[in-house]
Image (cartoon, rainbow over all chains, first blue to last red; front, side, top):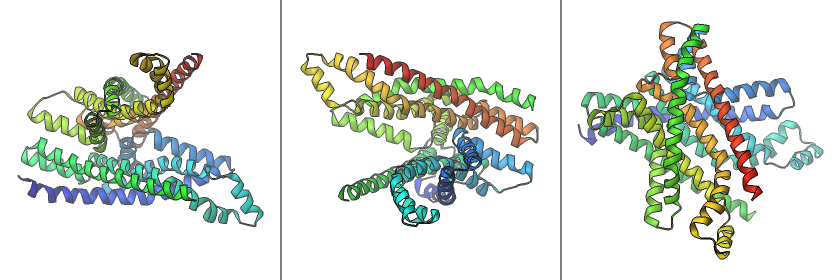
Length: 216
Length: 214
């Protein structure tokens, strides 16, 4: 087997990885933002629930959460195919981790701004949408991009429930050709390229934003 | 439920063993990597930076497969436990190197310059001025790395190491209480991470008192 035959197969796997990654971020980040906003409400019951969700999502290994969703949920009648199960498991941990990023960003906005807005007659929803979020999301962006790279690497765990993603395809090809070193090295290189490019993009965005902040 | 718990508890020793040994390797290997990265020799610092980025840029489970199935099929064959410890150890080294580097960079340059002017030798500047403060500053990041490794260590079950997750998978095959089994496994990992957090806080407190007493 040569590289030209191998690469298209690995790229098929990469497509599955990228799909899980995109869905995980699309579900996980908004959920994380929601968790962090709920935590700010005075309701003790709500913040207690959020605390438990966040601690479970951050404290347990992603692999265990994945098994819990894929093998555990059928116990209560929820049977999911492998890819949706992986996306849900990854989205839970992503939401838990990103809620901490959002929480930090939200608390970086001075309280006085919200008090001023209230005096000016902004409703609580308006305060969040037009004052808190536009600023907090900018603060959170570099950390969110950085964490997105970690999330991409985490998609490799879906191999454990037989999702045909990048690692799964590579291992399959290695089993057929018996060229484990070469095939797994190429797969590793693909992950490496994705994270290096991601890190470079995150650095650039952070630098550009620092400049923008310095100007204002 | 008791028999499930007993089965999972048997894996705790292995989880602690893999994580603990990986942390020891990581702390030992991370220091020279951080030193090279901060050296004024551009080639050395580039090589050290490249090592850190390559190790961290590939998921731990892919490294595990590369070492176990890749290198294991042709060059050196290790048993699953040794493979897990060595691979996670190198993975840990790259992350601890970043923690050390952050700690060393947090010590203001003026202090080292002042110490040199006061007649301290290079070694003493490092051991008496830079190192104590750098270690203190590196502890929170180091603790985050250690707790991350504890959770990351669950992937070693995929190559057959019977850690908590490995025991959980085996128990789940024999029964139909998967949801209970994996929930208990999750709780065990959370419980294990608490002493690490407390230990780091304790060490941080002790160091802080000693550094500021000087």
